[in-house]
Image (cartoon, rainbow over all chains, first blue to last red; front, side, top):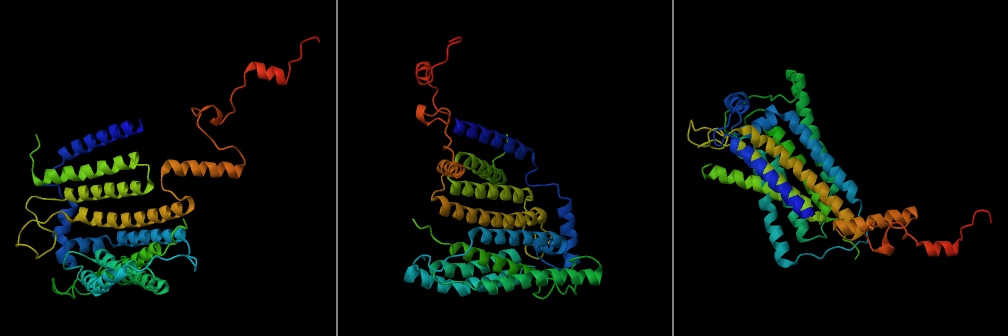
Length: 229
Length: 163
């Protein structure tokens, strides 16, 4: 009975979404804000990647809120998971192939992550994407050998300092220009690594914060005690 | 009739993901499968949002990436979806943490089994009988079975008026 009701509900949802989708202007959307961003973002912010320009330049305050949501989720998760007993059973290491593969992957992931974070204003990517790859670099090693642990105190310091740097750059803009998180510094030549004012700095701060946050969260999840049974 | 093009197929796929995720959320009894269904519905919604910014023949919104003068897709949905993905990751991590906790406490993630054990635990803590369904077999109902008239009369004879 419940399954039939669920099926009917889903069929209704599907019909509704399809009807709405059929009404949408596929392929030629009515761009108003987007068109304005496309016109203005390049000359105003000097960043080639308009998505990063909007995320950090125009909607920096949203990004700050997003970072705090991620922080709240990570804090709540570690609160729920609790501490590990010293004598709890650990999973055995993953064997030669897995550990060697993880060791081989670690520098590559690190380089790719740093590249994506630093080039956030030029190529696809940015602080969030690169930060996730950085976290993965540390987490893969942890998966291959569960006896290894991450230094949570250091991760906490990196995360706190990166978050403070983001806010400090915003406050600096508030003092200098009168608006929180306004991009500062000369724009430079578009397409070069050192360009677009404070955008790359904010991007690096986001990358470090997200990377440290996710690495700590994943390490905490992997570190939870296995159930006794 | 809607023409069958790449955009239509992508749209249908994104909508399908949302619907499959929603269906999984209501049909599944296993908590981890519900979480997977939630993640699926979320990806479908994100895909749908990105697709609304698509323009015919447009390239990624990066200046100097494609041929000069080519139209760029709408960057705003991409920014919003980036936010949504990150928040989704946070929500899923928190949900997984809660699932780990539930599994450690009850040893199962099956919803029906969980409900039974939780209700039993609450009843034990309150010192009452575990609740059951009114449709359960005679001895397992929450209320004791209704006694028939004869047994009641034998155990406590009704005092006759005037006796």
